[in-house]
Length: 255
Image (cartoon, rainbow, N blue to C red):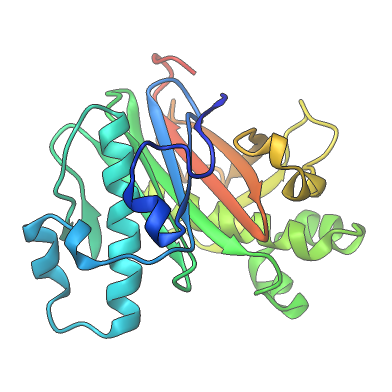
C-alpha cells in the first residue's frame, strides 16, 4: 500500500528541531508501520509509565527505548489509539486490542508495526543496516536455497540482510502464537515474491519509491504454524536500511 506520510511530513513540529525523519506506511488494510530515522529523542516524549521502565538504564539502552516508543506512539496515533506501550516478559505490551512490534538499529533507526485487526494473530517488524552481517553468517541464517540465491547475486550483502531481517520479524510475530517449538533461522525460507521479478535493491537509492514494499515469499517449516495461519511479509529499502514487516493472520480477514 502507499505511504501515509513521507520524510518530515508528519505535522509534528518537534521533528523539525531534532532532524528526525519519519515514514509511515500501510503494509495491509488496517495495519500501520512507522520508521523513524536519526534525530534526537528525549525522554519527555514518553508517557510517564514508559519513563519508569528505563529508570537507571544505560544511555544507549535509553536512547533505543525512547526511539522505539516514539515510533510506537506515531503508529498508535495513526490507528486512532493512544499509549502507553509498557513491557511484559521483555517484550512491548501494547494497549488492549492492539498487536504491535518494535525494532531499533544502533540508535539510528526505530520502527513499529501495529494493528487492531482481530484476524491478525501476530505482527513482527525489523530494521537492519545493510553490511552489518558478515558473509560467513549466511550459513547460520540461510537455508541452502537462500544461500545459493545470495551467492549468485551481485547484491548478496543486501539479500542476506533482507533474509535475516525477515526472519527476525517472523520470530517476533510468532511469539504471539502457541508453537510446537521455538523457531530457528532455518525454520523460515525467505525468497522474492513470485509476483515480482526481483527484490529491488536499487529502490534504496530512489526516494520516489520510499514506502513501496516488495512482497516476500515466506515459507515456514511444515507443522510449525497452526493450520489456517497465513503469513505475509514485505521489505522496504530506506537509504542504507532494510525494513521488513511480517503479519500472521487467519484466513477469514482482508489481505
